[in-house]
Image (cartoon, rainbow, N blue to C red; front, side):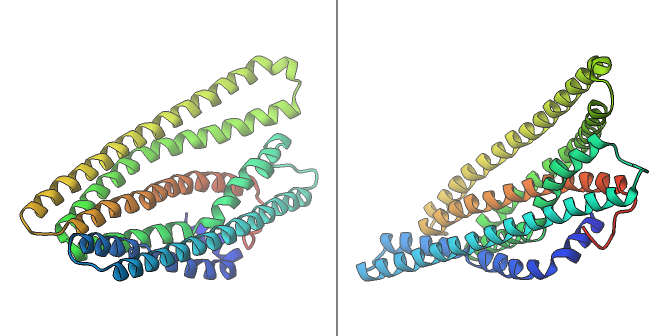
Length: 306
């Protein structure tokens, strides 16, 4: 993984720096909507004036539009960077094959898979390799920090909902990685045989490989969907827990309705970046495997070029 990130940084650090600043700006704005919701709801339950309500609403709208604009800029620049790296990887693969001459270390079928599918997946990941986890982690800290600051009990409960999900993902991802590696190797082998051998003679074996690839994908889907089911249950428990704990605290006069609503909204805002982080972790695991296979297949690969 360190080698993967080192190469990504070496070829894209100039483009990554402005993306990092955009990510931090987006995360810094994440808690502002919660504060506006809290003030508006508590104000409506109290003695807020129409002018104050309109002012808070206008500020809320400004922050929402600003955050959306920053997200648009981040996604556009990240996508452009990804496409640039995809092109760079494809050029490197072709240059490596040309330099090998008649001494091919990779079959034609595997080369096609590398240029099309694997280069696409590795390059797409490289464009968001730094900014995606950065913006999600910073958003988590921003939102959870706000809830903890306003109501520590609800904030700690939110943390207690998040942590078990990390354990569930860590336990299942190792098995998913093994299936992904096996699938990539099987697909390369099968593609090579289709291109280089007489298809009539190996048709039965090719069909068996296709069945194997299908079964591997089915197992990957099962692991992913099972994990998603558990995470959804934990999130549901978190929602019910905040409503119950927050409701009891409101009845005891220990907090306000606005804070409970903000905490509930905060859980929703935390769920999205947390799911994005889980998705990113899975993508990182799969990309690392494909990157290692790609590099191992290209002995003349220039390490100064990702």
